Amino acid sequence: MRSLEALLALPATLGLLSGVSGTFFYPNSQTSLLEHILVDTHGAHSSGFANAITPCSKYPNYVSGNQSMGRTTAAQWLRVAFHDFVTANVAAGTGGIDASIGFETLREENSGTAFNDSFSFFRPYVNPVISTADLVALSVVMSVGNCGGAQIPFKAGRIDATGGGAFGVPAPDTDLPTTLGYFSGAGFNQADSIGLTACGHTLGSVHHGGFPTVVGPEAVSPTNIAGGIHLDSTVANFDPLVVHEYLNGTGQAGGPLVTSFNVSSRSDLRLYESDNNATMIALGEQGEGFQNTCVNLLGRMIDTVPKGVVLSDIVTPINVKPINATLDFDNQGNLIFSGYIRVRHPSPPSSQGSLFLITSSSPPIPLTAESATGTSIFGTTTFYPFSTRINDADSFTHFTISSHAGLHTFAVQASAFVVPSLTSRFSTTTTSLNFTIASKSSGGPNVKVQAPVGQQGTLGPAIKTFSDVDVSTAGKKAGYELWEGSVDIGSLATGALSIAVLDERGNEIDVGFF
Ligand code: HEM
Ligand SMILES: *[C@@H]1O[C@H](CO)[C@@H](O)[C@H](O)[C@H]1NC(C)=O
Ligand SMILES: *[C@@H]1O[C@H](CO)[C@@H](O)[C@H](O)[C@H]1NC(C)=O
Ligand SMILES: *[C@@H]1O[C@H](CO)[C@@H](O)[C@H](O)[C@H]1NC(C)=O
Ligand SMILES: *[C@@H]1O[C@H](CO)[C@@H](O)[C@H](O)[C@H]1NC(C)=O
Ligand SMILES: *[C@@H]1O[C@H](CO)[C@@H](O)[C@H](O)[C@H]1NC(C)=O
Ligand SMILES: *[C@@H]1O[C@H](CO)[C@@H](O)[C@H](O)[C@H]1NC(C)=O
Ligand SMILES: *[C@@H]1O[C@H](CO)[C@@H](O)[C@H](O)[C@H]1NC(C)=O
View: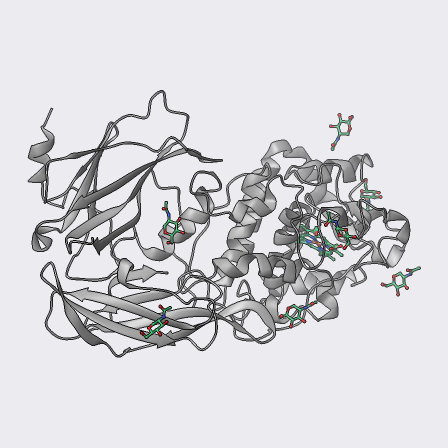
C-alpha cells in the first residue's frame, strides 16, 4: 500500500479531479447546492426542504391554513409543476417549467391555494444559482421519490420568467378536444396525457374549497376544512392504485374527477375513456412498472423548458462531498482552510471508517465524524468537520480525501477569495452588505454581487445584480491584499446572496453565499 505521505506528491490529474467553476463547490455551486436539497433531507445538516412533505400527508402552517384543511403539500407540488408546464408551446419554444405560474395565481384556471403555498415555501431557498423554476422541478422529484415513487432524474438550469405566460390549463369542465389540444401543445399525445394525469392523480385530493362544482359541501368537516376528497385510497403514496381503483371501481374509483355528482366535471373519466380505456388498462397491466412510466412522463414534464434554456447533467447524490470548504483568516491572521466532508453510505456502514485530509501544508490529518448522521432515500450521510492552517497559499492547488473507498482529489485555487469572517449580511435594520476580498494580485478585484429580492405579482424572487462593485484597499493578511466593499441591495434579500470574484474575462474565480 502506498503511504499517505507519498500521495502528497500525486499530481491532480488522477482522473478523480472534479471540474471547478465556483471554486470551493464541487462540481459547481449550482449542482452542489441543489444536491444538498435533494440528498440532505433528514437528520444532521438537512436543508429542511423535505420537512414540508414529511410525512407525505403533511400540510404545514401556511397563510392559507394548516393540517386540518385536508390539503397535502406533496400533492400540491406536483400540481403546481403541471400548471406551470402545460401552457408550454413546444413548437414555438415558449413556456414550460419557468415559474411563470407564480404570476398566474389569480387566473380562473389556477384555482386553489397550491401555487402561493408552494412558492412561499420555496422562496427562502431561491438564490443566484437556484431558480424558482428549478425548485418547481425538484419539488416534483422529491415528492415522488420521497413518497413511494421512483427517482426522476433531476437536471438544473431552468430560468425564471419575468411575467405571466400563455393561458391553457385544462379544468374539470374543459371538453376533451380542448384538453387534448392543451397537452398536445406541450408535446404530449393522447396516451401520454392519460398516463401523466394518472401519475399526477395518485397523490392528493379535489377540494370543495376551490372546486365546488366538482366536490360538494358534504366533504367539509372540522378535520377537512377545505373539503378534500382523495383521488385514490392512498392519498400520500405515489403508487399505481389510482389506476386499479378506476378500472375496478373500488376505493375512490378514480377520484372525484371520475365520479363527481356533476357530469360536466368528470374530466378524468372523459380523458381516461377517450381511447376506450386502452391506456388505463395497459397501465394497470404494468403493475409496479407504472412507476417507470411515471418517471418517464414526469421527467419529460419537468424538462420541458423554453427555447434557449440549457439543462445541466443529471444531479446525482455525491459520495464524498466537500461542504462549505472555505478559506478564511483566524484571529492571528493565519490562512485557514475549513469545512466538512460529507460521506454517503448507500447502505448503512458497519463502521464509520477513517478519513484523512491531505493538503500541501501538512502531513495527512485524520478526521473524526460527528456523531449525528443524516438519512435520506439515498442512504446515510456522515459529516467530518475539518480545519487546518495553510502555510503556503501558492502551493495549495488541490486537496485529497483518503478513505477506505479510495482517494478523492479536489482542485482549489487560493489566488483570491471572499473572506467569510470579514463579510456580513444585512442586519434587521439595514439592507446593506459589507464584504472583504483577499487577493494575491496587485489590482483591486472585479466583484459581482447578486441577491434574490421580492417582486410584484409573484412570490418567486427576482435576482438583482451589482457588477463591478467598488472596492477599497484594507491592509494585508498572510501575504494577501485585502479589499473592502459595500452594496446596498435596496430591499431585504429573500434568501442567500452571492459574492463572486471574477477574472479579467468575467469567469468566476471564487464565489461565496451568505
Ligand atoms: C385533464 C387534465 C387535468 C385536470 C382537468 C386536472 C384537474 C385537477 C383538479 C380540479 C384538481 C383539484 C385541485 C384542488 O382541489 O386543490 C386536481 C388535483 C391534482 N392534480 Fe390534476 N388535473 C389534470 C391533470 C393533472 C396532471 C397531468 C397532473 C400532474 C402530472 C396533476 C396533478 C394533480 C395533483 C397532484 C392533484 C392533487 C392536488 C392536491 O391535493 O392539492 N393533474 N387536478
Ligand atoms: C387551523 O386552521 C383553521 C382554519 O384557519 C383554524 O380554525 C384552526 O384554529 C387552525 N389550527 C391550528 C392548530 O392552528
Ligand atoms: C356543474 O359544473 C358546471 C361546469 O363547471 C357548472 O356550470 C354547474 O354549475 C355545475 N353544477 C352544479 C350543480 O354544481
Ligand atoms: C381488481 O380487483 C381484483 C380483486 O381484488 C384484483 O385481483 C385485480 O387485480 C384488480 N384489477 C385491477 C386492474 O386492479
Ligand atoms: C372505462 O372504464 C370505466 C371504469 O371501469 C368504465 O366505467 C367505463 O364504462 C369504461 N369506458 C369504456 C368506453 O370502456
Ligand atoms: C454551510 O453554510 C451554510 C451557510 O452559511 C449553512 O447554512 C450550513 O449549515 C453550512 N453547512 C454545514 C454542513 O455546516
Ligand atoms: C456596513 O458598514 C457600515 C459602515 O461601516 C455600517 O454602518 C453598517 O452597519 C455595516 N453593515 C453591516 C450589515 O455590517
Ligand atoms: C399570490 O401572491 C402574489 C404575490 O404576493 C399575489 O400578487 C397574488 O395575489 C397571490 N395570489 C392569491 C391567489 O392569493
